[in-house]
Image (cartoon, rainbow, N blue to C red; front, side, top):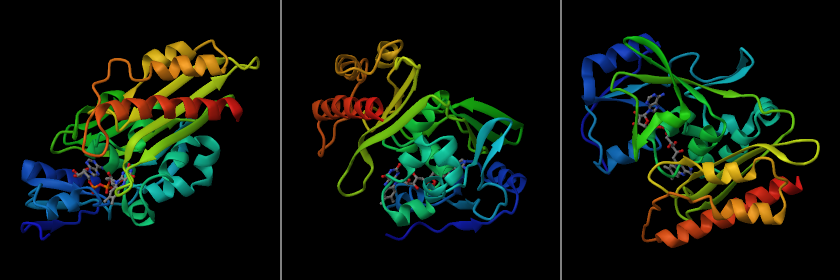
Length: 286
Ligand SMILES: Cc1cc2nc3c(=O)[nH]c(=O)nc-3n(C[C@H](O)[C@H](O)[C@H](O)COP(=O)(O)OP(=O)(O)OC[C@H]3O[C@@H](n4cnc5c(N)ncnc54)[C@H](O)[C@@H]3O)c2cc1C
């Protein structure tokens, strides 16, 4: 439980952090909340020679409105998301999912940027950001680039981030006035990581039909994903029992489910359908 020796750096600016990453290449790793990286280092699954702590850089931890969208700094903690009055009003899906993450210790340290960069197949925030079509702002030696949340994670535990890049900001749209959202989760009894998590947002017309439907799932496949077939089925329909059942049946279309000692693949698929139906029923009844 003792990590390999490493050198600790605490830069005060994004530029200094990027310079450190550039100098040390794949021997360096950023440290955010440390709740995924430090256990890996202690178990010696990850060996890091230079740890670059971005916790002392000002301006990376904020939730505010910028150009009509919501801007969230990458170092914003799960706890800050869960407790934000502004988000509860402007984009309630984020606090609804953040409050379901693990326990208060993990929520106090873990960050939204770390959750994304870690690219865990079972993360509570990634499906939310997929459903909300978030845009991620990345800084590196060549400047800034923006990546859609749907293009950020390449495969299990691998994102598009280069060794010398930092995820600095997440931008999400303000929830439309006619929208409803919910986050349904089956937590692993030990870690609380989602065995299955369902992020759902619908926009309802005055007649009660879905003018838009966004569904994203986590815990089920090697990468959290949007359930496009189920979304298409919901569009233009009222959230009746029949429509909900039909959409829930399609939520795992094209998915190769994960299997582990706790949840075999058919159980994962079953949970995904049941909890999608529950999420949609909750939105119908809101
Ligand atoms: C006991 C336990 C239970 C947990 N339960 C849940 C749960 O129920 N749901 C859930 O979603 N998560 C859960 N987690 C994971 C937790 O949310 C982590 O906090 C999160 O996955 C990583 O965030 P972090 O800030 O701790 O990142 P760190 O551990 O510091 O970093 C993770 C990785 O991301 C990189 N990184 C971090 N920030 C950036 C950045 N801004 N730019 C580029 N790269 C970056 C790091 O270099 C590292 O490779 C749990 C963790 C623990 C220990």
